[in-house]
Image (cartoon, rainbow, N blue to C red; front, side):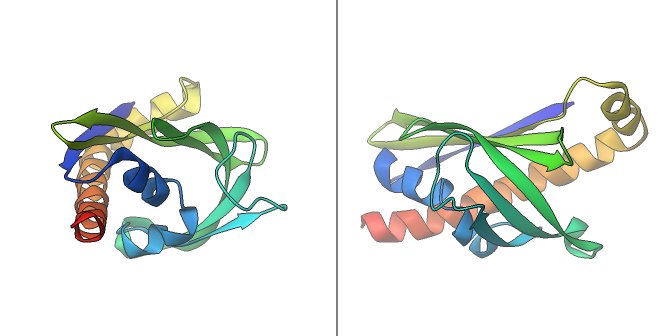
Length: 153
């Protein structure tokens, strides 16, 4: 009920951090989330900050807004947020950054909560959705890599 993808980026960790933690830029990179905005007075990554993402599920639809809450914001190391349904966590997404070989290894991951609803969902659609998530995470990271490496050059 989880997955992750790692891509090496030839850019300093602080530049990668600026990119992965700026939810207002996610539409440039993600195949599914085409817009993001800070809400409830938040202006940047901090634990407890809230934002919403505009999603086009599977790049086809339905189209909807999700409310999210930042659960980890350790500059240059870790950015994570929970996708909320009311007061419940539906999914957690994040990025781990590790300096490596003069650049940064970036791992994007997702994790479903270990509840009965998630277990049923994963049993029915998990393998297919997991492959979609892996493909979309790789696409997101490769698009970020292209931008951050141009900036670093």
